Image: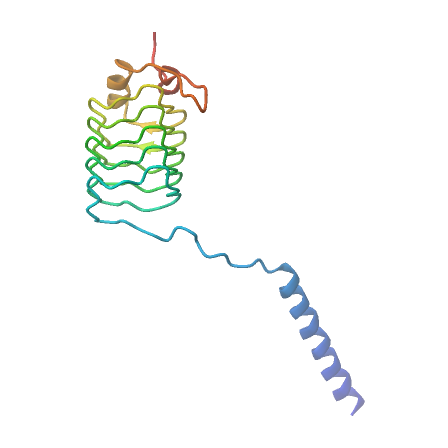
Length: 169
């Protein structure tokens, strides 16, 4: 009888210690704040200026003429999008995935693309004055085209556009 009582007491102690371990080492689950996704959405001429869009998805979205002036698009996903004549002036796209996006004639003045991925994207006639592309992954062809017109210094990061693109001379 003492053996059974001792076994039960040991089991209760072990379960109690396990419960305490879980309670004191578990991290709470926090819901993602921005769970909005605009995948395949028609967002032409919408106004997202000065909006926090951190981590928001814009996959295959139609964003012609959309206003993202001053928006926070950190870690946003903008793949396969059409952003002809979009306004991204002063927008923060740090770490954003901008893959296969058409940014022709877009306003990228003073935008921050630090650590962003801009592969297979088009930036023909885009205003890149003061934009910061530090550590961004950009196709060499696009970099060469942008270096022809790169100028200015980003007012937030203090980095010259030419330097961030690695332009020579």
